[in-house]
Image (cartoon, rainbow, N blue to C red; front, side, top):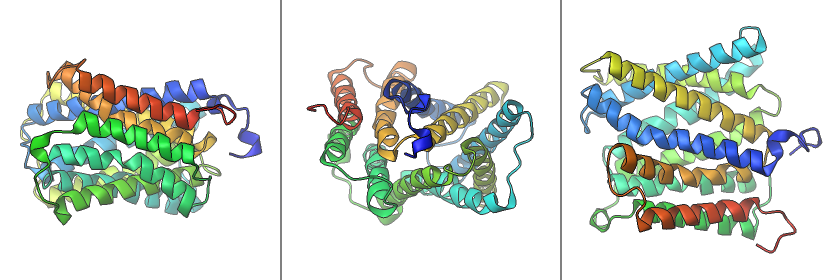
Length: 313
């Protein structure tokens, strides 16, 4: 964190906590939202090309929303300069296109439970990249303990004994792991690029670029929407909004804070997803012992990483 950022309101732990958890809540709502969207649009569970096409539409719309909102806020159209275009393309390749292409293909060939657990590793991997590859911060024992607590929460909320017997496949679990690495790299790149660039501009244009690429890839593979209704369109717009809002706020938080302080909250994503799926889709109990234990562990991990340096945690 640079000296000019020190003391900024977005570096205050309560503010970071509220905004990061809001992002995680939005991302968590995507779990039941996407499942409902597939049902409304008549996209079957095994139709990977159609799912990629649907994701492309979502992120293309998200990019348009961010660019429009950012342009209104800045009172000028957010048009990237020539020197910024390579950064946008790199972010789009990792954060939107690569991450979600590998995730959707991998999800089609791996048990959903195991995919959730592997995806939960992404926050830990992001912190490792920031510390060990990009040298943005130090990897401390406290950060490792916090990540292990958060990951334990992900395992508890996702675990199902019936799924544990399946074997490992490269185009299944392997692709999910690649997706996780894509996310981790993109988090570090957002932190790096936003030191000199507007994170809102980066977010909007990388969404638009990656979304269009996903849409075209889904179409080329035979993807389609079988039943485009008004209700489905409203839900798609909501999914685009939550991506636009969450990723933009997340990017701004990464601009002003260490990667570990922000990405540790990512462990809350699958927990919120499970809780909201239970509430909206009636998939399990909303306040089961497993949910409470998972949420407790995730909160403990977040507290350990964000505790003041002079505390005894």
